[in-house]
Image (tube, rainbow, N blue to C red; front, top):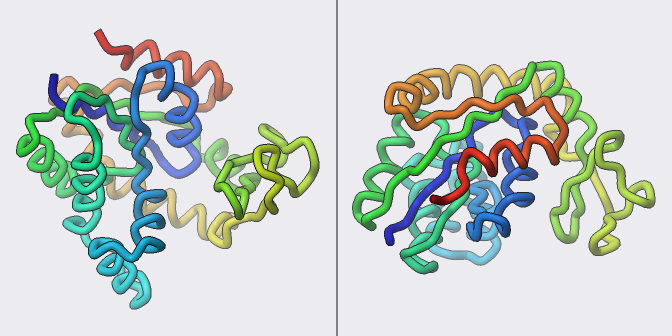
Amino acid sequence: MAIRIIVLLGAPGSGKGTTAEKIRDRLGAVHLSTGDMLRAAVQAGTPTGREADACMKKGELVPDDVMVRLVEDRLDEGAAATLYLLDGFPRTTAQARLLETCLTARGGSIARVVFLDAPRDVLIDRLTGRRICRQCGMNFHVRNIPPRKEGVCDACGGELYQRPDDNRETIENRLDVYASQTSDLIDLYTKRGLLSRVDSAQGADALAEEVASIVQPE
């Protein structure tokens, strides 16, 4: 059995990470968040991490080939017969082609692409209200998923903070950039018969159930 990838596609705030965490154990899958992998590689000082860090320190975007190398490194660490939930990559058709080359070389393929779609105002509300634990990275929301104690992580007791880019002006720009980047990608996966669109404005548990029903292994 080869590597099978489920791509979770969606704008910032659409619930990709939360959904992946909710369904990974049920599916026997590994959650690959490219954002988390990038931060981990930089912190660990891996060759790929050092290259990415150099770009970010110069204020440049991390090149596509570096991002796909992060995915390759992680896939090569695991067993070949593994189901992966890929969150945050690809975002463009160029990245999709690189991912396809990466998977072909490993005898793998994309099993399904799930597009988590939500109205812009819902995305903005989710992102402006998001709070993250400095210690373990767990996500909360001031209204939708509040911690038991304000400002304190339920899981580890760490301090919760708001990301600097989770302000309305920056979020509006991020959503505009995401929409322009991914419109062709959505068309590509639709034409290939791989894409399923779900309403991610629904509650987190209902969303996870719907996505799980779509991607449940045969």
